[in-house]
Length: 110
Image 1 (tube, rainbow, N blue to C red):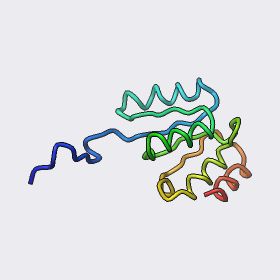
Image 2 (cartoon, rainbow, N blue to C red):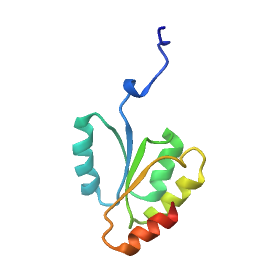
Image 3 (spheres, rainbow, N blue to C red):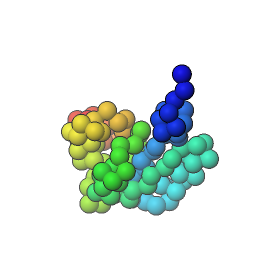
Image 4 (cartoon, one colour):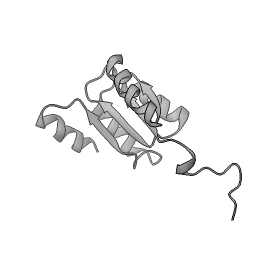
């Protein structure tokens, strides 16, 4: 059975990665690794911008984000995404944690 021309599956598109980091160099570095591997990278530089991009462009397949950011930190972004039915099952990977308290706070936010 043929698929309609407008039907899209995971094989038809690259995974959408939302990269959230308030340090542009960090975001650029991860993007430099992911784009050549075929990932569609959406970049935001703080939590407010990240949630705005999710609202405008739809949920990503995965989020890679920093914890400490201006305007809205990674904990709050995680909490807001887990409260929203459209994004509650999107995996969120926190990068840049270096203490057990950061890990506990992330788990509590989820």
